[in-house]
Amino acid sequence: MSAMTATEQAALRAKAQEDHRALRSRIARLSDDAIDLILRQARSHYAWTDRPIPEGMLEEIYEITINGATSMNTLPARFIFVQSPEAKARLAKALKPQNVSKMMGAPVTAIIAQDMDFWHQLPFLFPHEDRRHLFDGKPEYCEDTANRNATLQGAYFMIAARALGLDVGAMSGFSNAIVDEEFFAGTRLKSNFLCNIGYADESALFQKLPRFAFEQVCSVI
Image (cartoon, rainbow, N blue to C red):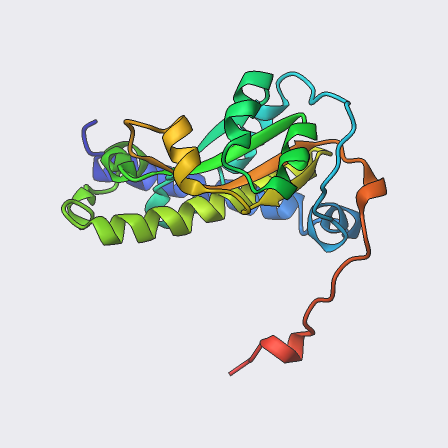
């Protein structure tokens, strides 16, 4: 892909600024109900109903997720949606015993992974200038950038699913090495965390656990 001209960049910048002003004039903030749904009163779930995820909703979740901010628009996250019995059996090999039923009962389990070669796509993702030299031959920097930003994208994914009316239950109780061997052998992808999604059976919930108060963990300096 050839670099944009200065005129093209200026036109795109002007449109982006106008689009943002229009968005802010249309929506000043989310409603309290919307905030409750995606974060404030949202819960992590462990049991699931058999209600299926509507067709096309995984694509819609992704479309929302991919618009979340990452450094230099690197977008290193890759998503595997595990839903067939065969794929679930493969994934179960990696889980701690107490997590197997949680995963098997969910309509879909997303493997949030990261592509360690994400930076090869920067000419497309960050067309202002070629920044591949920042990552070429620097595996530790690549890994740090991939892990941080794929984790961010995993959080966007969870919020997007909740925003569309689904429930989520993230899991880290599994062997990354087994997941990587089972699903990503021969690639440059590495698993980050898992996330069950569907419509929850709330009878498995317990009370919401404590949270810190602002003054306990925040400083204004």
